[in-house]
Length: 236
Image 1: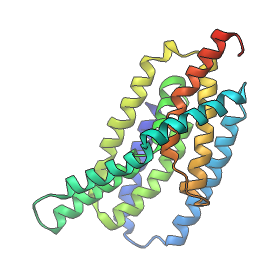
Image 2 (image 1 turned 180 degrees about the horizontal axis):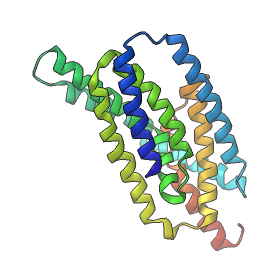
Image 3 (image 1 turned 30 degrees about the vertical axis):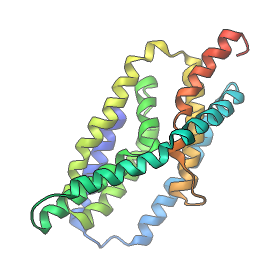
Image 4 (image 1 turned 45 degrees about the vertical axis):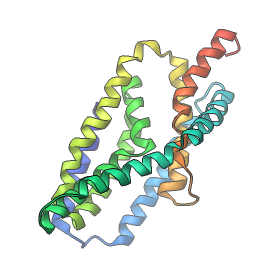
């Protein structure tokens, strides 16, 4: 839960700074910081990948996972879920200030929760206690909260509660199955997650090429299952 608690703290700090600074933070500064975080995420994802003991597990997991993701259209589903929730919550009776509060809360909650990094980081935190992925996400969310709060107001701060429940729930769920996951399974899942971090850096942070990263999420489940199968066959 450490990673989630850090994430909640950075959202609150970033949101408060956003309320205090307003629109005085230059856009070029925010873009440069995000680019720096993108480069770090790229390097960190590569570091996770090179730890694999069998690159074929990672490759197979990605290929099978993305086929499942494309068939289920997970990435499109995540975006539709975000749009539906925003439209649902925006149907609020009241004045302009009330609508502004709801918009800030919903927009920030969706951005902070709907994404592969939130799921991957929470699983890693629950299974291995490694919260570095969530720490990187926390910095991103902190700057995001700053930007959102400066324009959408105090509602952004309340999104920290949603992040706590969502990511904390995934972390606790992963922790309950920790005894069933071997070191080899966690290693290959982390290596596969490293490739997903590379995709996030290339697509969302550095904006080099758009990738449907959400469709790769099933690979995180496929990887430990492939290790289990290969160990049973005696080829791992």
